[in-house]
Image 1: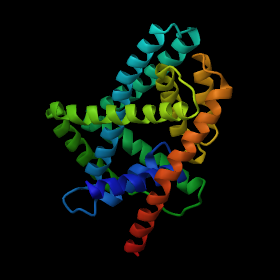
Image 2: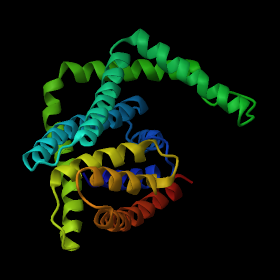
Image 3: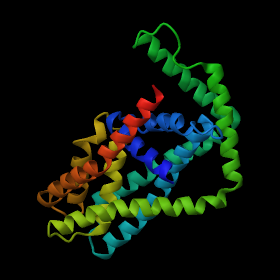
Image 4: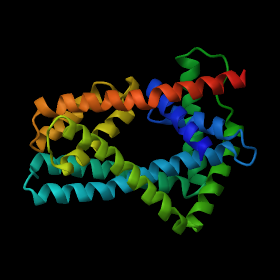
Length: 266
């Protein structure tokens, strides 16, 4: 557990400093966890992807609760419904696409081989590299290993119950942290609005090209909260304070452990 906690702090740092939709963190985790000879890079990658899927699915459940709370207090308007519906559709769509691709060995080979060739093409045309960044034949072997591990998980899908609820608890805890910051500012707000805004802001931050989604995260969270009746004069300073506190708590220890890992590899 201590090893995984340390790895999670390092991953948080990597994903903040090198925004890539989480791909950088997935790659780093594969290298980090493969220090254990029993865990292959493909298995480590699948672990990270399944963690992401559990987080998304558990948030969907939390979002349903949040909308129910908003409706109970009469705070659901057309904009709120549009935002929630769009977010739900995108998240479910991404999950369905992932399941479709990795569910077949031929599809996973075709998809990731095409992706690998595209990355190699970009590296040659844009970065001016003389050779391919990723070896396709080696990559296919990893894809097959990835598919086999995924098949093992689907056969034992009932064992994903605990990871799902752990992911739900992680999402709920993050929302409650924001709620506590509001209380520290002397404001009591509808927690349903926070659940919705948290999901939108995190999704946008995931695809942002800026480190940690700076600027985009705060703007979107403020806008969504405003649509739910929470004025920007209240939500903006609270969101900034939450981001500052969250960053100060997680990034320094993440940098410390990452620095140790890098020095150890030299």
